[in-house]
Image (cartoon, rainbow, N blue to C red; front, side, top):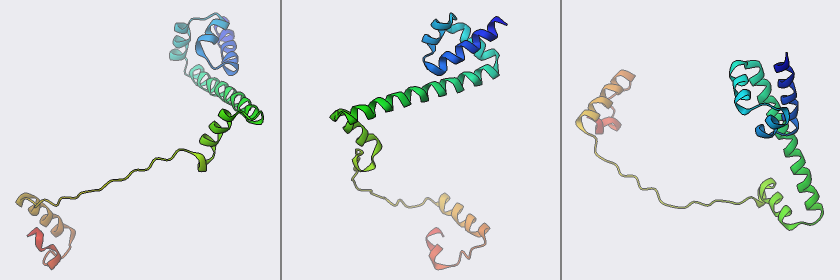
Length: 135
């Protein structure tokens, strides 16, 4: 019964502060106990993952809210960050250039034989001139 109540307290705390160590300290359990519960109780493990996700979303919302406040205060670092990460026109671009060199090597007799057999099995007309290079 005590474990059940502690698990619920832990999950509630995790939804507010998605940091395992902090939640362990606030609820008075060790990380080892937490991971033992997680390993033994699949339902708890699922609730743990869900609570961690909710807590992370909460912190992300808070961070984004503070970023927007900084933008409203004309903080250029915040403005630049937002544009580079939220607006495709400002996102860093990577350009690649180069040449592709293709070398055609002659087929071995074994390769030619395999191709000829594959063509025969496919029902294609192997007497067609376009397949002469495989003969």
